[in-house]
Length: 175
Image (cartoon, rainbow, N blue to C red):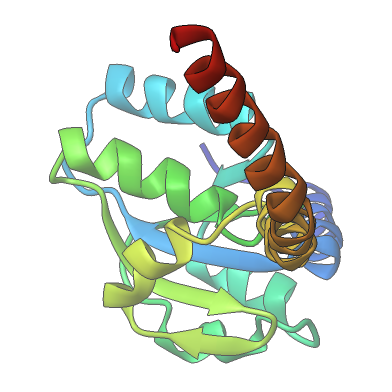
């Protein structure tokens, strides 16, 4: 289906708007995926809040110009789909990684996080990044550990004394 100039401008504007807000982007090759596979991938992306779009490289290059994903423009070759994370940098990588595990025809070619172009092999590393909530929980655990240890150390002498009295009581009752 051929697009007229106005339709192309709308697509370029839409992708540029999404790219301006996204923390990360992935360009993946999808040669050989069936329609049902693409439908499943789109559904997974929609469920995860990922913007996923198959678009011509010429339009994608125009849309990514003057965004933090400008570094991807020169290496966009072949049929690619674009996946933009909406909030968490690793969310698009998780969707692509999980889908690629079950289907070897989906291959990540370009990965960019906040304007830095990463190797395609870094997909696993990006996908395993904790979400914001997980990172907060990890930080809270790190901050809470010394306080918990301190309370435990301060409470130990009283606990020893109580155990000593209980042992003495048990010894007196046994005699």
